[in-house]
Amino acid sequence: MKIEILGTGCPKCEELAKNAKAAVEELGLAAEVSKVTDIVEIANRGVMMTPALAVDGDIKLVGKVAKVDELKAIFTS
Image (cartoon, rainbow, N blue to C red; front, side, top):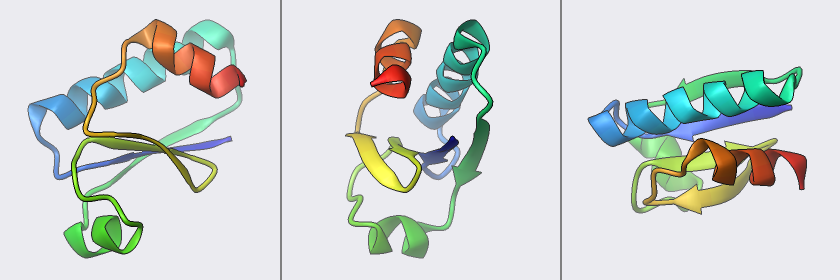
């Protein structure tokens, strides 16, 4: 599973990244969590608000910092 946090590195982006890593650890998933900070790439994916979350290339959240439990539900659905 490839999880990407799309954002410029703002505090909300950092919080979403931290929560995503915690959710992956709690679930024991074999997942790679990475950040996409290039504004052009983020816009090319159709994201106009950050932070955003992509799982295996599919945008799952936009403009929201999800809690660990919310992310666990996304990662297991």
